[in-house]
Amino acid sequence: MLSPSTKPLCPCCFKAFSSSILEESNAATVTIERSPLFDFSSVCGTCAPSDVERALAEKAKTDPTVPPIIWLLTPLEIQETAARVLEETTKNLDEIAAVNLSEVTFENTVFKLMTPPNYKTNPQVAACKFLQHCSTDSEICEAASKAGSEFAKSRVLGRMRKDVYERLKAYSLTDECKNLDSYNQHFVKSALQDFERAGLALSEEDGNRLQQLLEQDTAVCDEYKKILVMTTPNCSSPKTN
Image 1 (tube, rainbow, N blue to C red):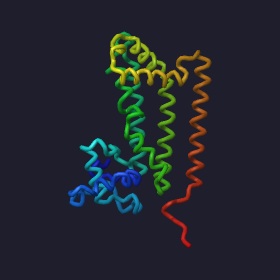
Image 2: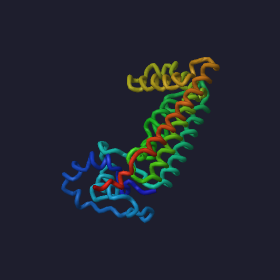
Image 3: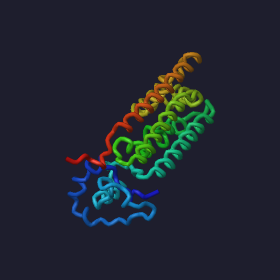
Image 4: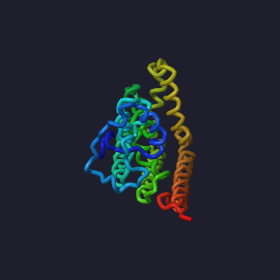
């Protein structure tokens, strides 16, 4: 995988931040070597890395105002990264579930739901799936769309983890939780609501029915995305008069 210093940004971030990076006096002098692992001549002119993109990718290392996303520009990169995120996500939930109910703490329960690989704060999730909306390469669109579908299914399954919910619920009743600051207390409440919206506070029968509905909803969203991809014109082949 390419490092942040050699990876180009997607067109959206490039347009959003190029003017500010160009204003810096040293932007034009930044030289970053291209990685031999990726043939940049194979991407379209819009997405090909420029000096501005390379300078901005370098700036993201130290400037928190720049998106910390390393965009994945090949189907293989997307597939491999998505598989790794899904594996790490399952492992993270398994680690929470393995904690004894009497030994739950902020660090071994809540914090694991606040930070990567959790999908809500994992920039790799966006890096894997976002280009389905703007890439003119059909293979990239397909790989990103598939990654998005896999993440959605993983989210549904994660919210149905009763063993994880039980640890979070147990922690919410502790004195430690009651003494958290308002920000962290808000997150605990929000995380509990995520699980409860998935039906974990329902009876077993009602919870199973809700899970079926959520899975059907995911399937409908997948089908809708496929229709969009099939009916969206290829931006790299504009019509001529």
